[in-house]
Length: 220
Image (cartoon, rainbow, N blue to C red; front, side, top):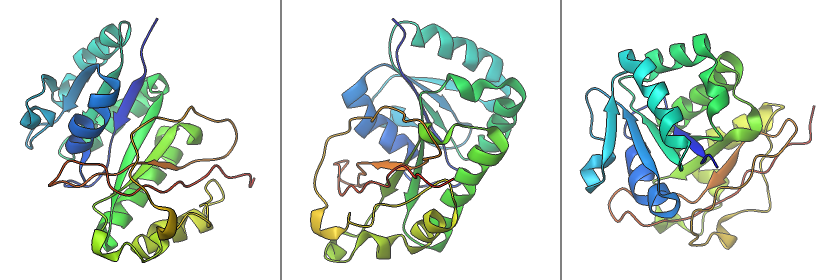
């Protein structure tokens, strides 16, 4: 029985892709970690074995992805230095259809949120990823502002959710019911829904922090 294939990707560096892969997802799913990165650290920084590739080695990466996933879960961590070429390969090959989940980390602030929105639009409009397969991680939240509704931490991202007909945020999920939670990937759902968050984590402590759900949309 083949395993689940998880892709972690963002146009922007420093959002926690490798930390998410190595410290949050892998401890709970196991499996092989594949890193497409030329310049920056990957999950091997946490003492984990990582299969390393450059975007130019996409053919070998894709062959290994299929081979490893035949026996267990795989986590693909795409570094910002290789993301454009990797996306080009996905578009040309249709390889995005292989992934069960595509995880996009988002960080607080104008640039972090803007790059996350740009990544989502690229995945949806250019690559053709099915909306129901996408998950957004709200990462690096300031715990000192825990009494502030999550919408105020990620104002631009929630505004995008309101404006884009394919996504809809759950407005009753706010700072009052944030909680520590273990990672458990929800199953893809049918329809135009698009973004669901999974628990986020801090870069320093490597522990899951606050979670919030952005529920499937029913809008057409």
